Amino acid sequence: MMKCIAPFVAAAALAVGATAVSAGTLDQVKQRGSLACGSNPGLPGFGMPDDKGQWSGFDVDLCRAIAAAVFNDPTKVKFIPLTATDRFTALQSGEIDVLIRNGTWTQSREAELGLLFAGVNYYDGQGFMVRKKLDISSALELSGASVCVQQGTTTEVNLADFFRSNNMKYDPVVFATADEAIKAYDSGRCDAFTTDVSQLYGERLKLVNPDEHVVLPNVISKEPLGPAVRQGDDQWFNLVKWVNFAMIDAEELGVTKANVDDNLKSDNPEIRRLLGVEGDYGKSMGVSKDWAYYIVKQVGSYGEVFERNLGEGSPLKIKRGLNALWSKGGIQYAPPII
Ligand SMILES: N[C@@H](CCC(=O)N[C@@H](CS)C(=O)NCC(=O)O)C(=O)O
Image (cartoon, rainbow, N blue to C red; front, side, top):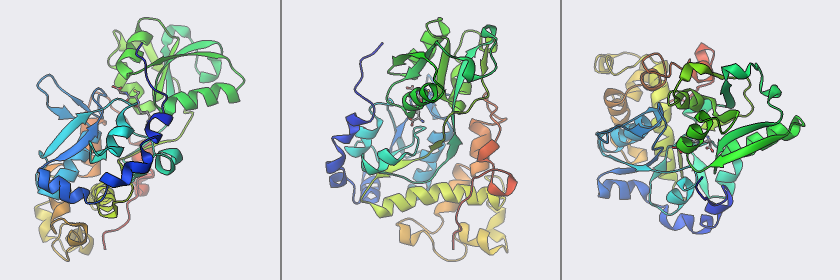
């Protein structure tokens, strides 16, 4: 087990100095010629490099979409691998421009750590995985269980809350990385493994016999995951936020990678504004008027990015659920570009 610093306090020390490096992020990114994106180094579906160093994942594609908006080139990104514990200090210190690493938007990460979450790219919640042979159907049957969990996460806090509020005893077994936690669970060190539900499906793929394990139906927390930036740079905050919104708006308007060029001829005023055919909505954010055209053309709409990394087109096969558009039974809702 690796030794780690306490989850929330660690980054707080730097919060005061955070604004020193925060203004002018867009100019710095342009001068550098690439975006420094804080990423998860080992989470299937969300972010990880393959053996050739090629990164892929749902969060990784949001990094690429920001690069597409800034440079009209989604390849101008440097992915910086970060653990749960070191991710916020990396953002505060200016080592990265944006953190897109399945990070939950919480009050203390904004008010105490001096960060801002620029929207939600995935609505998640915390769950549990257990061995089928344990023969339980609810997390409420986990009294007395040992639970493998990763340090420096909201997961640790919610786990304690859940057992305390249900008057149940448990034995937390804490690790610095997800890999260590999942390996320990697989080797029988813990009765249960807990993390965000989306990650349970990704981590399950790493087990020796994935079919011998089941994700329990209980969802014990709200985990709105999204990109985070430093406070004190409204221009950059706006850009990151509107890149995510533009992808959601594109899905709602039916604009995809495949049809985006045809849609340049569309009569629909919302599509014309999105793609920069009418008006210039990039200028006030410091990017070109066709910023969203390049996002969709080179990376895709929200729905396409979801399906490719997490949905039916991926090994995870996660249903859209809460992440369906608001008009289709979910809660993904982006303000209009107008
Ligand atoms: N959403 C939670 C949990 C995020 C998190 O870091 N989860 C772990 C548990 S699976 C993870 O992604 N680990 C990947 C790794 O360390 O390689 C948070 O923001 O605190």
